[in-house]
Length: 143
Image 1 (cartoon, helix red, strand yellow):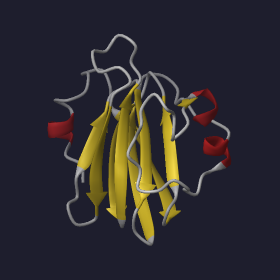
Image 2 (cartoon, one colour; image 1 turned 90 degrees about the vertical axis):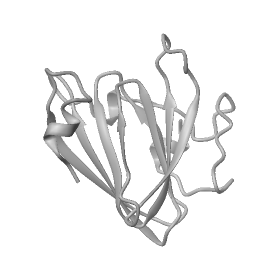
Image 3 (cartoon, one colour; image 1 turned 60 degrees about the horizontal axis):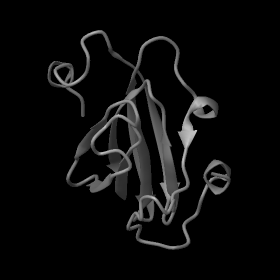
Image 4 (tube, helix red, strand yellow; image 1 turned 120 degrees about the vertical axis):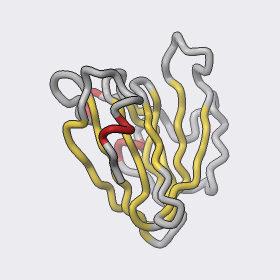
């Protein structure tokens, strides 16, 4: 799932991946839109099937507030590299899904309490989610 020589050509030379995180979710769970302005994230779906959504939250970007989606699953084994300032969200399409994050950043890790959280259905984006009634965490319900 990871080849240092390839990924190192895509991120700044002074960054290294520091830790991994996994998220297990059931069908109809929607996580995100979350992010920060410090961390690079390499994400994939290890098991199951998800709709991955990436939202550009970098105010100086020509694609600010634009989004793109990808189908990630254990068959296609696609990975997405998100630079800092990108909002990260996914929707679980299968019975269960195992999501993997690999994180690179300088200094200390920015945990959820210091990340930005944007409502999954924010009208600025009009994201084409597969549902109008997803299962949300408390963090995402209160966004």
